[in-house]
Structures are given as C-alpha cells and as structure tokens.
Amino acid sequence: MTNQMIKLDDISFDQSYQNLFQVDDARLRADALQHSTVPRLRAVLNECIAFIKDTYDIDALEDSRISWYPQFRLKRKNELTHLYDSAYASLGGKQSKEKWHGFKRKDGKVVQILPFRYGLMLQENGLFIQLENYWTKGLTDESHRKLFDFHIECESLIHSLCYRANIKPLYYHGDGCEPISTLKEHYDWMAENSYYDNFFVSEHVKYPILSDDLHRIADDYVTFYPVYDSYLQIAMGKPVRFLELVGKLNQWLRHADKFSETESPEDADELVANLSDDDLAKAKEAAEQKVKVMPSIRWQIFQRDNWRCVACGRGSQDDIILHIDHIIPRSKGGKDTLDNYQTLCHLCNLGKSNKDATNLRNRR
Ligand SMILES: [Zn+2]
Image 1 (cartoon, protein in one colour):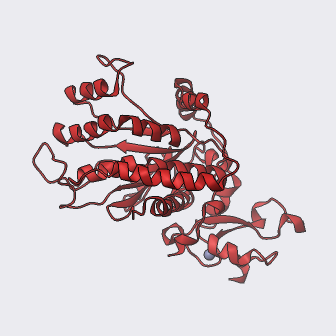
Image 2 (spheres, rainbow, N blue to C red):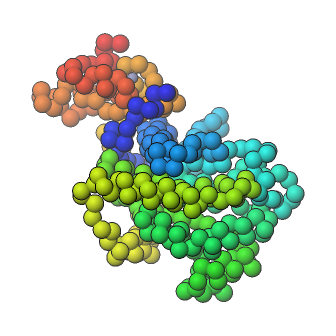
Image 3 (cartoon, rainbow, N blue to C red):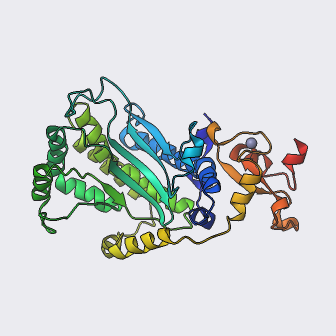
C-alpha cells in the first residue's frame, strides 16, 4: 500500500488551501478538493489509525471504514452545483446488516449504517476534528438513551479527554434548556424532547497548517478516540471498553512524557477561548462574501496537468498525494512562473529529490 509511505512530516496545508475556498470557480474548487485536499486528509487519517493501533492495540478499520468528501461518482454535473466549502476524511461504522443490533430504528428495520462519523474537516477557517451524528433521526429513543447514559456515567473522564484533546461538545441550548445545567439534566432534557445532539468539535487549527500542527491534531484525534469507540461498542450491543482504553491512553501518555522534554502545561484560557461566537460569526461572514479570487498558482498547475503526476500518471484515486515541483530549482535560478512547475506524486517527487533540474514531463 503506497499510502503507508505518506508521513505527517510530508503533509501541510498552506495558504493556497485557504485560497481555494475563496475561488469563484466551482469546477476548480471541486477538483482541487478531490484531488489534492482529500488525499492529504486521508493520509493524515491513516496516520491517526496507525497511532490508534500503537496506543490502544485496536485495528480501527475492523468495525469502521474510511469515508471522505467530496467524492464524485457519475452525477458529476449535478455535483458541481453544490457549494464546496469543506473537505473531510472520517471513520464511520462499516455498513452491515448484522453488526449494529445494539441500536434499533423506529420503523423496525435493521440498522445498517451507523449514524456517527469521527473525522477531520478542512474549511476556510482551518482544520478541526469532528465527532458528528448525522441522520440519527431514525433511531429509537432507547438507542439514544444508551449513548446518553454512557455520557452521564463517564462524564468526568470524557471531560478530561475533551480538555486534553482540545475538543468540546456543541450542546444545544435552546428554549427550555438551561444554558447552565448539569450534563445529566442536559441529556434528560434532550431525551424528553427527542433532541439528539452528540456533536463534538475541536479547536480550529489555522492556516498555514504545518506538519507540527498535524502531529498535534493526530494526537488529539487519538486521545478522543475512546469516545467514538464507545459509540461503536454500544451500537454493536457490546460492553463499552472506555475505561480500558483510557487506561491504555494514560500508559501511553506517561511513556510519551518521559521522552518529551519540551511539553508545556496546557493553557486553560486558550481552551476556553476556542470557537467563540465571534469566531463563528467571522467565519460565516467570510463564507458569505463572494469575492473573486485568483486560484493560487498551485491550483493552476494541478489543473493544467489534469490533477495527475506528469511522470507516472497516478492521480488521487491511487492513494498518492500530489506535489508541486520546481523543474529548475530556485537555487539554480529557476523562476516562479507556471512553466517552471510540474505536478509530481509524492513517490516520483521523492525519486527526483537528488537530481536537479529534471523535467519529468519532457522525459516522459
Ligand atoms: Zn508519480
């Protein structure tokens, strides 16, 4: 599997990725998200899955599968009418007729798709982790109650994980729900009103998102994984192994701390400041502004090269990530013009690194 060769150190999201969300060309935005952004997010998620194996000795792909967005199928023309304002890669329950009998549907049919996704989302305002509960409407109240009971029972530990992973719940505080209430009161209120909200979101990492940031977000993803795992276990009708996983996490953290000299204490004020209403309002405002922005040179080069490596022809479906390569390096007087750039996959880029001024397009 080529994907194993993509490491977090090789991935970053510079300003051109933010620029993408401002470009007023739906086609380019969709292509760039699919061929450049999504493969990088998938590579980060694959690293997270490897860290989950190291930390908890769990194969995250045993009960979950990876999904991503955007993902075009045949209805391409229709899809282009969508507003492409995000890209994600996430873990979600495997589709199965037998797996999820811990949950029941109101209409009595078998639960085939687990309605929870745990993933990485990239938007104009940055990269963040999200545990979300889409399409849970079909589940019975009893199914939701099981999840609520888990949250109430493990409240303090889940809270610790939230703190450690820079993640916080986005609780609904609407009419009839006390803005300041205990978790139990909150979940009781949700159960009474059939309002199901198990939505958690992390601090947004702002552009440019460098590999150090990705290491941090991968750590956070792994730290919060026991909550997602508990959802899976509850959905499968199995006992939750939350405490066991938190124990393994603690073991791993102690081990990591021993070898880390630079770790600084978390800044509590910073955590509280995350995702303020102000931030959200600003992000919304930015998204609503229809400014015509030139696509970054990166997107122009990828587009010219048809979103494929000019040397080997591999594209995003081949589990590679695309890089921009200087044909003549800057150090040798190469210019920052379109014709001095080419699209290379990370494998060909690696092969080229020692050879200067190789125009792989012409050689091919
Ligand atoms: Zn290649």
